[in-house]
Structure formats: C-alpha cells, structure tokens
Image 1 (cartoon, rainbow, N blue to C red):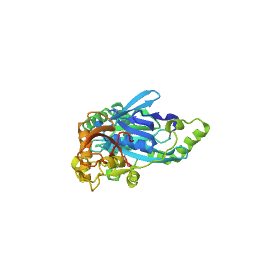
Image 2: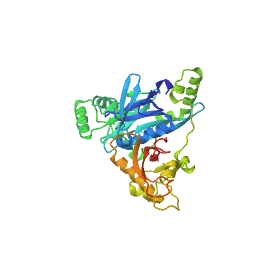
Image 3: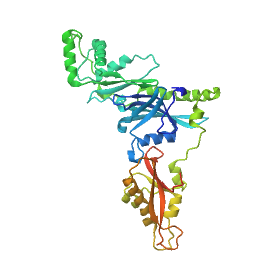
Image 4: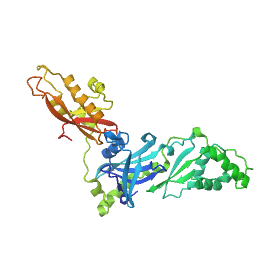
Amino acid sequence: MTTNTLMPIPDINDVFTDGFLIDESGSVAFLSLIGKDTAIQEFRARWSLPVTQGGLTDFQVETIDGTARLNIGNPETLEFLSGRLSTKLFGDLIQVFVYQNLAQKPDFANRKSLQLFKKDTAEDHSDKLWTLIKSLSPLPFLDEWREVIIGLFTTKHWLRELPGVGVISAYAITIPEDELAEMLKANIQSGALMAEASVTGSFIDHAKTTLLPPKCLTDLSEELESTVADLEEGIKRGDSPLHEIFGKPVSTYTRSQAIDDGFLVDVSETSEAKESGFIVPVALTCDVWDSYVAWPSDVGGQDEKGRLWDVLFMAHHAIKTNKENGEHLLYKLYCVPHNSKKGDDATEVSLKLVSGPGDNGEHVITIMKPNES
C-alpha cells in the first residue's frame, strides 16, 4: 500500500484509507485506515455512538473515480488489527485493518464466510476457497467436483468477489442449505458430478478452526516498517503528499494524563453522576470545577455536592432533549458564582458538553466552558 493511494474520508480529519471492500448490502467488509492515533480512535468511537451524539452509520470515501459511501453495519461484527507507524517526520501514525469477523470465524450455522487475499501474491486462491466451501457445506463434496462446484457456486452467486479498491481482495461464500441438495442431485443425475469416489475426509474439523486474524493482514502488518521507510523516502524525493496530509507532528496529551495533572476532574464514580443518569466516564475541566462546583466551607447556602448535581443533572437533561447531531452540545443552568459572598444570587451560565473517544476509543464526556477546547 503506497501513499499515492491514500483516499480522504471527509467525515473525519487526519484519517485516510488506502483500501476497502464492501459486501452486497454496501457495508464494510474490509477497510484499511491510516492516520493520527487520536483521529482513528475518534472515528472508531463514533461508529458505536447514537447519531444524536455525533455517531456515524455510514461515511464517504473520496476515490479517484468519485465518492463512495460505505455503511458501517453492525460494529459488533467487526474485528480490528492495528500496527503503529513510528515516523521521524510525523510522529506516531497507526494503520488499522477493519474486517468482518466472518473472515476470522466462519458462521457454520448459517453457512457463511469471508475469505481475504492479498492481490500481489502467487497464492492459489482456489485452494483456500475450496477448503472453505467444503468446510461450510452441510453435505460432503468430493475433491473431483472442485472445478464444477466452484463454477456452479459462482454462477449462483453463492461465491462472489466483493467490490472495492486496494491490495486486498475478498470472496464471500453463502450456501443456502435448502437449495444445495437439489443442485447436487440435479448435477449428479445429469452426469456433471460423479459419485463413485469415497467421501472420506471431505469435511474440515470445525473444532480445529482458529480465531487468528487472516494471514494476508498479518503479512501486511509485518510490512509496516518498510511502509514507514517508503513514506519517509518519498518525503526526501519530494513525491510524497504526507506533509500536506498530516502536517507537522504534535505530541499527544491523553485524558488520563490531564486527570492526573489536575486539568480535568473525573466525576464518573460520584453519586451525582450516577444518579443524574451518566453511564459513561464524565469529567469537568478544572475551570468549570473551580467556577461552578467548588465552594468555600465557611460560606453557607451552597455545597459542592449540590452544585455538582446541578451541573451534571442539567448536562444529562440537555443530552436527553437534544434533537441535533454533533459532538458538542451547549446547555444552560443557574449557578451561584464561586466568588459570591452569599448563596442566593444565582445567574445563568452556559457550559459545553463534548462527546467523544477516550484514550482507548471508549465513549467519554467532558464538560467545559464554551471558550475551552
């Protein structure tokens, strides 16, 4: 995979794809992503968020032939394999392979599977496809039938190559059990299939199937070091677009570091957060905490638990009543300023709720002032 194949994804900055495949429903069967770690984490996190909280059900890819739209489908059916690209020029980039778990674990109950291949190899694809077809089939196949069966499966679209771009190809296999017996019977009766040979050993032991990632993807992961070398050599020659795509490297400051350093106050485990309805990690910036939660112990009329409840309850109420998409949500509440000498001069203030990915791609929420980012 080379830099001149990088295709932008307009829905997210600093994330590109150099190859994808889609299934018959238009959903992602395979997707290769490359970009900044935090940007890819954000992109992945949005796949599992409700649309009202900035989630995505599909996204666009700008290919050389035009715009392609890919459905995400069910994120729970997707597997991820990633490798880190430690570049001298751009800091850490990562490459992530996303693929349907049918490529890792065939669905024997529904007779479905997905076989991935790397295009630029001399590997005999038909060997793997035949082994997989025999494994999925509820009826025994003779090896002598291989050419005829693969041809019949292709004609009936039970075996089909998936459309897409990049160096990875894939074949989807679906065997309708109720139609298979009739097809075999008709072809045996016509003489296209001979039934004299023994069927011993026709099946694959399902218990021996492993849950390892597809070999073609692990092979690509092992090539990441040479990929980095190619990228940086392209910079030296002046024919790589990476400096325009990713810009200068920046250091990554994680959420956990911000909490440890006191720039964020984690309130996830407080009774106020749980009782107001938050089920994901939530934190306040230190500025929000100091201005609208902290309260001097020698001044009556207010206390920190009550003030925190106000901030969190109104935040969760804003989430429930919001009808627009997006990662940012402004909301208002009445609050007594921290520098008040008494507890009864409340004023209306605005806060900003930001929904996005945490350090490991999990959904987190941060509450800040409107001018903070």
